[in-house]
Length: 114
Length: 110
Image (spheres, rainbow over the protein chains, first blue to last red):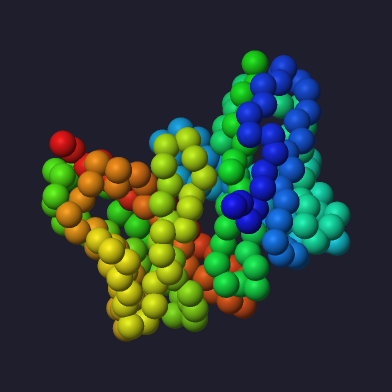
């Protein structure tokens, strides 16, 4: 079964609205979770590192005010795409690692902004 | 220089062929190494970890060369179902850092 669960799997929203994606670690506590974006036929791109109880660390070029990350508990991180635009349409994936052993990915969330 | 370098391919091979992918890493402090498989429109899933002594799982063999700082994945007797993107992942334990290759696309042709 899934070790990291992501919700929703698919979401369609209107341009200008905000969308929240949840990432949960099911069998372990994760002080750190990672958020990625992947465009079709391209590689995973790390967007930010989500840190429980503190601010997320964003990669260069990723707007922190547009991609709000909240890691309020040891098992849940959320990514909110604010004022979404069609160019934000992408596959968003989260990941988490139990004890630095290996890394597990959520099932991913397909976002389509119309 | 990127932490992890991987040939993106694509690799197009006939069924039954043997194919190998390499992945180089730049940080000598890297601790753990993995190969992931990503199918189209799906999340990456762990294929196998890579151990210092090398390890094999059926048709798949993973090897680590610390001196030259690369890992490899060998697939023997390729099946159509092996078509996917293969990602190498390197863990630098300090700070719980994971670094990804860009992925190598493999298509096995009938």
